[in-house]
Amino acid sequence: MPEKKYHKDAFERADDERKNLILEVGIEEFSSKGYENANINVIAKRAGISIGLMYKYFATKEDLFITCLRHGMDILEKALYDIMISDDKLLIKAEKLIRTICMHSKKNSNYIKMYNEISSEKGSAERIRAIVEEIESKRSSIYITSIGRALSSGDVRSDLNPRLFALFLDSLLTSLQFAYTCDYYREKFRIYTGVDVNEADDEQIITQLLKFIESAFTFSK
Image (cartoon, rainbow, N blue to C red; front, side, top):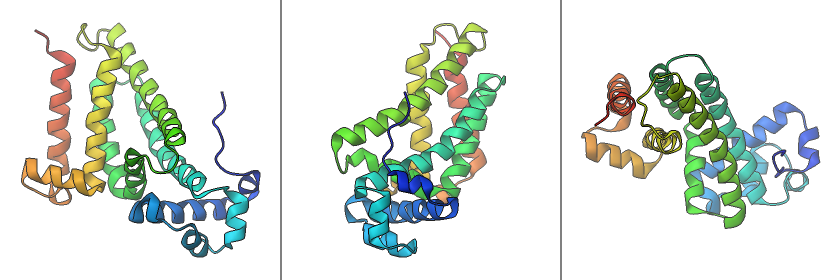
């Protein structure tokens, strides 16, 4: 089933430079001010278009928000997908995932902040839940399939439940994403580790998280 569009046909007809500018400006506005305080008039002005043209592209602010969210998350999902479909052992994939998430969270922090904004269920709760399901279904499918393949090949302990393990793995990686980008998780990181995440040793973070995941892959009762 094709993804539901949250933009109008006119937005698809716009040139790529204009579309990317609108989305990047929108992501900056939503991530810095939150959904409620973000102003679509400000986004239009900073993107160099009239508010009338903006509404020819998007029916509502919520539609613009969801389109911006998709744009940001698609970039990370593509990177995760390329890692998880490779023929690497699952532990090697896990290390690549952690490194990619650390890099992406620093380089594209606004994308992660927008994703965290969904947890407050701004706008229509029903529509936000639908877009969350869309995003999480993609990621969960990638993880579950890869873990299932590792299980079949004997690459991991035989008593793993691929669906539950995929959930736990994603929860760990999501928390790491938010630690680099969101105030609550950044403070949580500081309380537990004694250092600000931006001053922490990334290699130590990667190594320790990888050891934690490896123990879950390989140790049994």
